[in-house]
Image 1 (tube, rainbow, N blue to C red):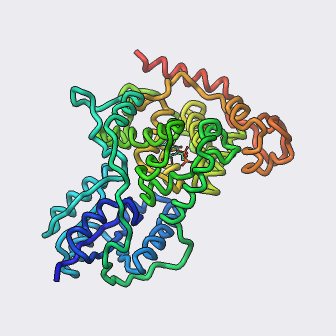
Image 2 (cartoon, rainbow, N blue to C red):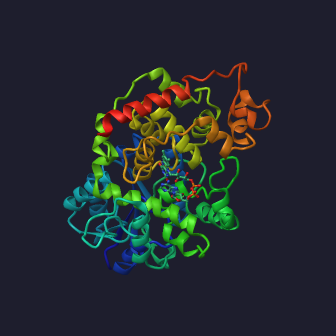
Length: 428
Ligand code: FAD
């Protein structure tokens, strides 16, 4: 009898278009499906992301006929133990390209007595592959995107769970909601009907104009290749957004330390404040700036925030409150269901001006006019800030003396100037 393989699932919680699963099936007709609950990764994630993960594991377990093995522990101990227990001949994974994942996988590989096979990654093109003619990484998005498109990617792999005889590993997952691959594919089908309107609606938080695929992509419930294969020539704006995800993964792959530190070292010298009361007001959505408060409350309520509003609240934290971007990034990572180290840290560095190909620091978002422009009827604000529900139309962006709603915690015009002065001091 051929020894079974182990398919160790991580950021690839699906059965379709799964090259690592295909590689395992080619090695052996039977496999152990394994997921390791690793406290190093779970500790910074808040309840919404952990709940979502459990929902994805339930869906995957169903698709594996109830045979997914879920074990809590350190991967470098758990994976070799499972291999020994089942007499497995190889371990198959989709490569993890993040700073922690790379180190973890090297440790697991060293501790295994069998082959550790990496096939595919969570990206259409694995980070590190797209390079300039001289071998250097791209630092600017548009040429990266051009080279990424030229590089191209394979067609979606034809896999499903029934290609493998799953070894019965009998783990009981706690009961609860199921998310995951089947939800992801349904949501994508639904969004495809709205894809033609994406370019027009994507900046409007009051409309249901974006795909909401981010959490599914985060956990690999769907591979970006599957989405890219469905796009037509007139869907370039959506293709570009997926390219941003790949760009940031590439940047972090080359510069893993930028998960914690400024990409642009000149920003190491910028002066920060450290007012924790202001930080709390921001976290709770009580800044007195309606679009900021709506966004921060959407984050707390849903574990998700619209992209335009992520930019507005991030700008407010960095340039109006003068707090370090990593304070905001940590709060986002705790609450976002789609919290992804590369997209989040570099989304923050983009706003803070310290990232690669970032927004120029001197472009300071005015939270009131951003609200008026992108939430023109005020519907988004009224949905998340009940204190302002009786204010009609776009005047909701300029409330004054509303009972129960705070006045502005800072004066935008004044703080904008402070931000510009601090920037001028580090520019030279
Ligand atoms: P859509 O507009 O439908 O876009 C489709 C997909 O493209 C998204 O699911 C996502 O995978 C990708 N994408 C879109 N915009 C970006 C972008 N600017 N950068 C990278 N990928 C993008 N995205 C995350 O997935 N995880 C994060 O932790 C995260 N943190 C962010 C923090 C800040 C400060 C900012 C400004 C942006 C952040 N983003 C993050 C990017 C973006 O806001 C979300 O991907 C998007 O809002 C998710 O909603 P959607 O799936 O409906 O997006």
